[in-house]
Image (cartoon, rainbow, N blue to C red):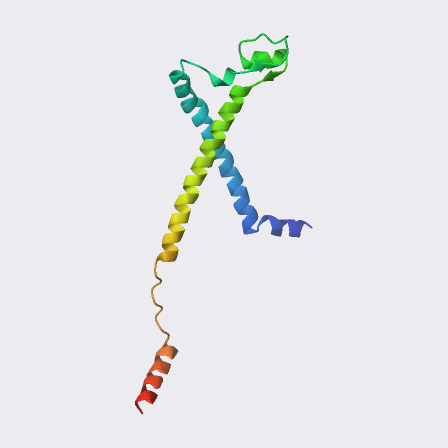
Length: 138
């Protein structure tokens, strides 16, 4: 059983998937930082200092906090600011992946469109071609 597991784990697809998941997690952290630390502050500055992360709607009368963390401690809240931030994260990731796949497809099309260099005939093929040409002359 251990041998079978080792064979399964060392297959190319499993290793490729593991690398993809690890890179995806790191990429997700970068996108989260981009959105939280760069894009949202710019949007906040444009909109007059609004902080989307603290936008919420209290779902009970007991909630009277001014920030999301305290409001969640007091009761149920609808944190639509967090949802907006995560939605923006998703669109950024989707756009970046779209651009990467688009470039990859262009490169692939160029490779397919490039004419392959004619293969040099082997010695046997050259010899057979000479014999054929001699027979045509006779």
